Image 1 (tube, rainbow, N blue to C red):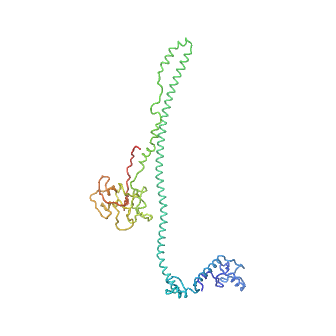
Image 2: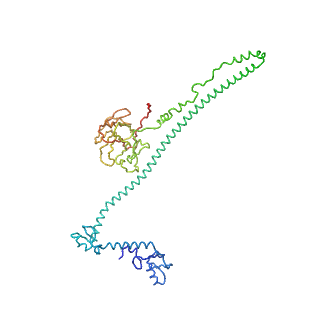
Image 3: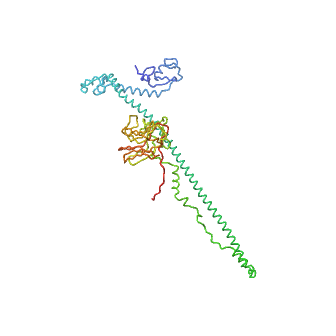
Length: 464
């Protein structure tokens, strides 16, 4: 009996694989010869299957079906040839367990397979299929893992886009503020320059107007005196006394000169221009000694736009990347330290559960028991404690309600100190031989944010 695959390629009339298949308008297909023979015996041309009349005497050849049948026959012939032994032309009925290959009965008795173990082909095929199926199970599980990871990768790719958009928006906003400051500063300096120009131009205008009046007065006296000089002797002598008095009455004026500060004070407007603007700009910018790394933040920690503070929040959809803390409500600093001395202040305010300190680069982020590599000061249920890398807990007695904590890490001196910057009071110092890079961190379960406080900026001038 033909297999289901073979039936799909068989003519309903001859029940053999199609030869030159043609297709009727009812979509049924037949061998061209079979359909011609069928119609010779019938008074009307109708489909042998559905009996629907055909309007075409020569139905079109189905090229697609023809190619499929040719490929099917070629494959069937190949399978048939593979079912016989190439050495003895006998059917391959046995499977050699030692050589792991099908053989015929003649091969079994040959020298090549002497003392080998054999199974019937069907038994060997069934057993090996079962074994192969078992080997597929880990691959199927691995495939499911890969598919889950691919989904996470796709989500991460989308998150990267949102990260870039958010960061671009923050950069644009910051530059917009700087641009606005520079525009206002430019407008103010241009206004001061125009004001000085207008003031000093007005002064020069007034001086020139006064000088023009004096020049006119001198010209009048000169012209009148010159007219007297041209008069007849008797007339000149009669008016001489008046002419002399007119000249003598005009005081001898000093030569007009510019006073100091008449010109634009270019040095004031141009000197150290960029430095002066930068000095004023420091009032609108801040420098935070520790920048929090959003890629490390627990999914329920929300960071501020400037990455200086964090607070507990509803769980966010963030990638499960290797840097992120999964079990601990922690966010670490973006920069680690393995030498030198470093200090930063954390504003804790009215937060009811917090911890601040440093952790080692190797500190594990996944769920687990208390792990080494973390040094911290903690506040919980009104009690201040110090936690060491080895798991020791030290209860601090006496500290008042703290608003700020100063953390000072001295890598070279091998110590970590906590103090109250409001009263300049030392709280506790941990001593440890640090062997790897350390990262600042903060942790909280409260909605009141913990904030890394900015440093006060100052400008110092030193000779180059």
